[in-house]
Image (cartoon, rainbow, N blue to C red; front, side, top):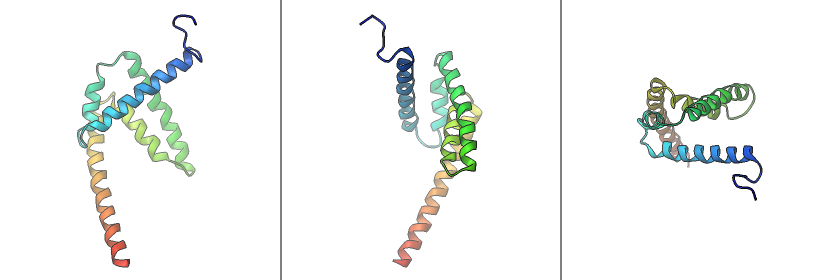
Length: 125
């Protein structure tokens, strides 16, 4: 085997490296506390190479039309919009702070709805 040769070609190696990188960043994002998660993640990403910033923006731009497409047909549009926003937040401190606030508000709403649902279910059981 030649030195520097990746089985499946260079494109396969690049995709594998990018997937591994994104999984590592996802674990890092989950590690931060809600309400400060996106801002801290944004600050942690500022030391990344220029090509990583470009890939994040390109991925965010690519996910937006997918979300729009799924908004008109049954599908996970919210997931694509959320992923796109999170990727854009790596480049924008303003957006990262807005996502932190939105996360807290959505968590509060979720807990309220969950508690209401459980109380309603318990009354009918």
